Length: 192
Image (cartoon, rainbow, N blue to C red):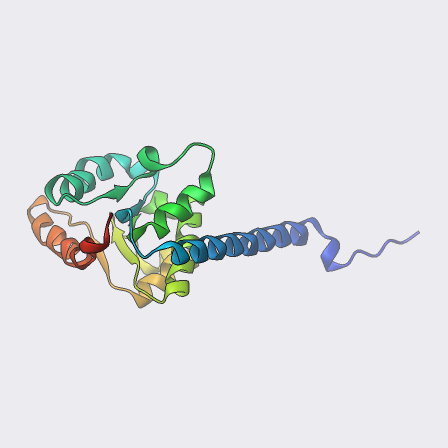
């Protein structure tokens, strides 16, 4: 007896179908959350949602948080501090839509992270949904364009948006912080 397998019956296709289905479920969820948020008010709880990989947490806690929260007095949404237990995707959506901007701290580890990939998806959807520049891309290390090729979302954002690069020399950090401040300052008045 001969059994004919179609493309739809192969395990590889089933896995791709599950990923595509999950992606569309995520988009529907994010869209629903964004509509609920837009109906409530245009007030923001945070100045910025910080999307970063745990391998880069030391830099975030030593450099970024003291500068933005300590020096500038801004309110940041950090997953280890501000997320509610048991609500992983809800926390991401609520944190991003409750912030003026999303700062993506890009490194090699960030690009390889499944959670960071989800955060980029949600932020990309918000960018598409609101048609408002809600992204700040911040590269901690030099990542050549050809290495961004497998990471479609980040690569396409880099092509369309300007971004900040953490300076190799500590002497150049003043200019970096001034540029970041210029992007965030216009949004301070609507934070609750």
